[in-house]
Image (cartoon, rainbow, N blue to C red; front, side):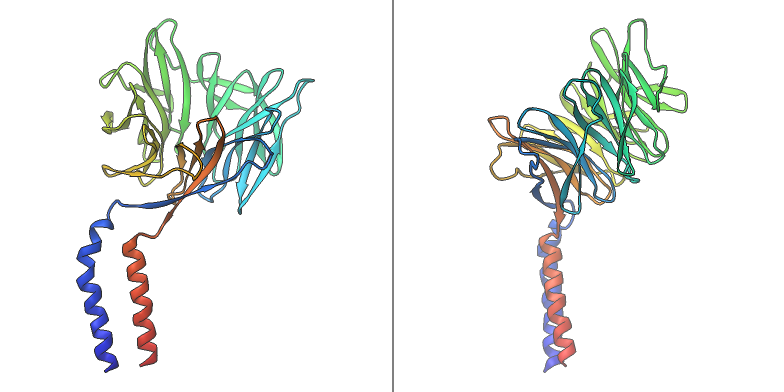
Length: 335
């Protein structure tokens, strides 16, 4: 009798799989988690997440002074400021690598790049903006209208340009050292890919205003062109058929961004609405790690903003199979 019951359960699973399996491909389920505003203000924003789940961004105090934060193990840590000069300082953390090195900007009397590592914040270069750091510790950004690599107090011009008067900025770098960003000339902006001194310009095939924002280790690049997200790979720009911005791409090719309806995940042509944190009216997804964890922010109609983490949760198919598997295992043990 017990063996017969077990057989019935197995047959039930087989019969139900065709009903639920269409959900198994592409339909991911995410739960937005608010990270709070522990400094007492009404504004926090998560800018980046690494593959160990560490999150960085900025939390603003009631007086309007912002402090960079590190969120890990369920707690947000205030990273403070460099404390340069007599004026109040604000700090913003823009990026973190898998070694826990954090880069950002300290804004006071002058703007100074900082790096935070081993529990200490220290100054890097002045008059520049750091946008990204890879696992080798290479920092890229912009300075004086040029796309640059930032090495301590030394700023190295990448030599990006398409004519007299053009400006450029580096937006992202992968772990192979490939760098992407934007170069402008007059009224047009196009993307570039920098590979060890060799520069490829994206051209104007999709539009006049191209802004790359993210690159993964395979060299896939995402961004926005004339208000539409794109994917650039193998020398070709592809319109994703959406509106808004694509901000980041992980090594699985999952893309996150923000559109008219808020934060989204794009994978294999399927768009998943990530939802909005309760009490807010709009959300934006800015970064994704290789585990599929996504960070960004939620904002309301009055300007209050809260950092958000979206974590994937098991799909209904997975939950069904786990539940039936547990029942079958229990019956087998009792037989």
